[in-house]
Amino acid sequence: MIFRLSHKLAKKIKEAPTDSLPPDSNPLADWSGHVFTGDRTQYILLTNTASLYSVVMSGRGITDDNEFLNRSLDGIREFMVEDGLEFFYQKFISPASGTVEFSKALNRSVTGSMNDMIYHATMWLVEVGLSTFETSLKLNEIPMSPLGYQDPRTALKALLVGNEDS
Image (tube, rainbow, N blue to C red; front, side):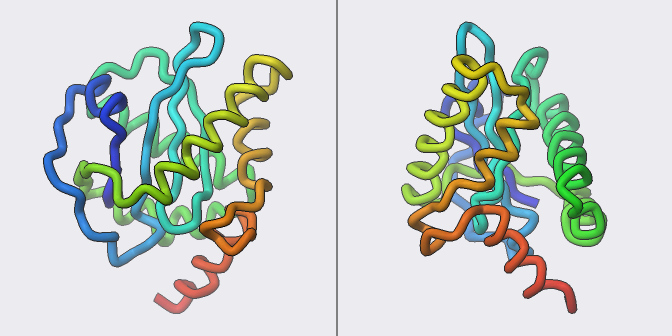
């Protein structure tokens, strides 16, 4: 499993990836992360690198790589369960989480899309007062140009359907 860290997130969890790894052979085990602040509260955006399917979680108390990994995997699992995708988490993500590598970002397209999502997430969290869960749901409904204007939830399901026989 690969976690691609922004410079800011790498510094927060005291990791210093030097290379950008190629995409994981299992696209569901390749996630990008970035930390952002909304009204003096820290949040972390975790985004599946291939589908842009995203989860927003609190960044409070995450100070090292171990805590980051535990909370990230819990956050992804909890959100996918609530989104009706528990089977795919258990089949494709959970087994891959036994071996984790940290990497730099894959490309600017993913980074740019995450920056757009952070803009929306900040507005929904701070201005509207949505929870991190509600914000994650809304982020996964936004049509994204790197996905041919599909939303991330639909793109993730397309990946899942393509990997069902794996």
